[in-house]
Image (cartoon, rainbow over all chains, first blue to last red; front, top):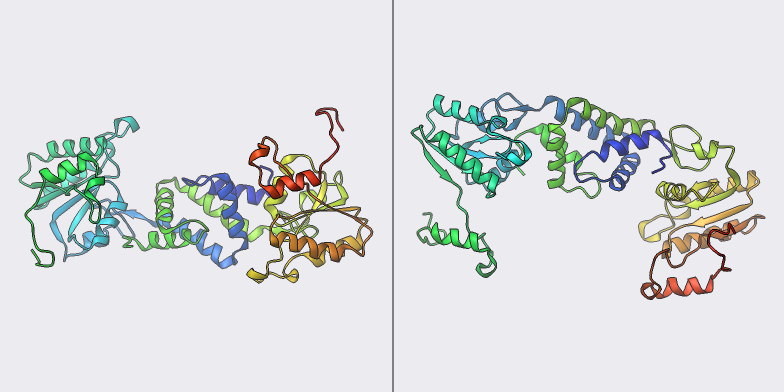
Length: 206
Length: 206
């Protein structure tokens, strides 16, 4: 590509480093930014830089946070004896959005994936074990993806957690609300039959 | 969405203002940036800010440029009597990439579009007319899109340029190289027959 401006070329280079952004899209974004008010671009550039420079990892759960301890871990109203293990912070957000969970989290920052060279030592598993040996954790919920890597990590964690006096659970897998049973894949449908639960009348509060 | 961090939320807000970037993609981009080296994010943020703060419009052709006059207008080896009128700077890049054009450009910064509230006075048409009355322009090539708006702008320009002693041309429309004739749309195929050109043997240099 033949850029008429080094400034433009350098901005396009930087924007095209973002995941999923090719050079044509990067050019469109750069030209969009050129047309914006200067304050808007100052705010954009500042927010991105500030995010990288000031963001921290919560020292307790490894969730990203503005402070040393994240809002969830710092909240004394939450059940600190209930720990939900997730792959990354997007899963924390997704579970928080349900409004159904009042425990704390532990963010692994990945899952065991030999093909990507990610072993248990690259994850925050030791920190989880330390937390459990230090604090009166009652239950650990595994909320990892249902992939070979997720299952491997679940298995590894279950072995590591076996010596502790805790309840180990995993989130329920089954047919999504609103999904047709005839179109569900066999594995999900099979699991949803094996793991069937007592029927309750919706809204009965049980 | 429930962000665990104000810094993250503010970066996601800014990223999702970019065209074509929704909040989920913005979150993915923000988390990507968090994982990058600090220098990379400083470079990213700096390039974007510098683009907005230092970029200029070429005083002659309105192409974006690092200097008051862009490299194309400043190049004395180019044919300054030949002016190609385009809608925006991406068209300049596209034509430059062909390596087939040695004249200069005039960037209109849009086309006449009553539905979007863009009239002739919002474009750089007066600057084009001034340039033609001031300089010995020989030929103006119209390279605007083949849309109602493009045709309207072509018509408007042809009326405005009529008093001048210049040749007015438009880029050729026809079947793209490599395209099958049977799949061409009727308007393009019809125009390519009306505007047929003398046959030359490829590579004969004619």
